[in-house]
Image (cartoon, rainbow over all chains, first blue to last red; front, side):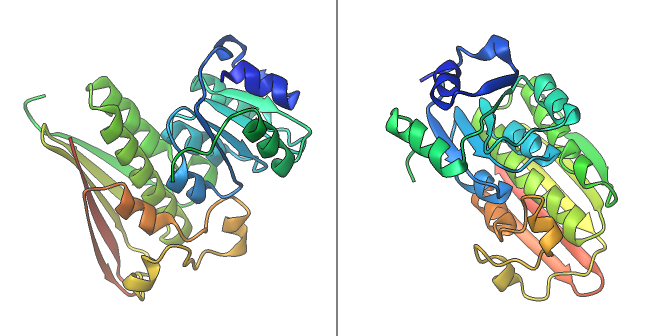
Length: 115
Length: 140
C-alpha cells in the first residue's frame, strides 16, 4: 500500500511530507522502544509510536523509515517535525491507540515483515 | 575511493536530543561515497546504538570511523565506568539503564545485541573504572 492508504485507514492528519504520500510501504512496526524498532524493523516500513522525542526521528532516519505515525493523539513539537521535514520522512498523527492503529493496518493487508 | 577516509566525532554527554548526530553524518557521507544501502543500514544502526550507549552510560566519548574499499571500521572509545559483565550485557533484554532513559525510548536491553547483529565483527575491551572501547567492522 502507499502512505496515502495508511493515512486514510487511520484517519490521520499529515504533519509533514504531503508531497511523499504516493510512496510505497511494505511493512510496519509499532513500538515505543526505539531499540526494539532498530532490532526488528524492515525496509520501506511505517513506524507507529507513542514516543514523542527527537530520537524517534533519528531512529527513523537510520532505518530509512518511509512514514512515522504518532498514535493516541500525541503531538510532536515543531523541532521534531522540522527534523522529519529535513529528512523527507512523512509524519502522520492519529487519535487511535496503538493496538487499534496496528489492527486497522494489519486488517488492510499490511504485515510486520518476515521474522 | 583509493585511500582510507577517517572521520572523528566527539560525543557530548550533555544533550540526549543531539545523540545520533554523528551516526547521521556518517550515514550521509557513506551515501555520498556510493556505499551499498545494506552496508549503510548496518553501519547506521550499529553506530547509532553505540552512540546512544555512550551518552546514556559513559559520559560521552570519541568515535572514529575508518572507511576503506574493503570495509568500514568504527571505534567507539569512552572513559566511562566500564561493563562489569560483558556476557550478561550481550544478552537481549538485559539492561542497566535508569527509568528516565526508558521513558526516552531506550534501555530495552537491545543495544549491544543489535550492534553485534548488524556488524560482521565486534570486539569489546572494557575495564571497570577506566572505560570501554568497542570496535565494529562492517564489510563493504
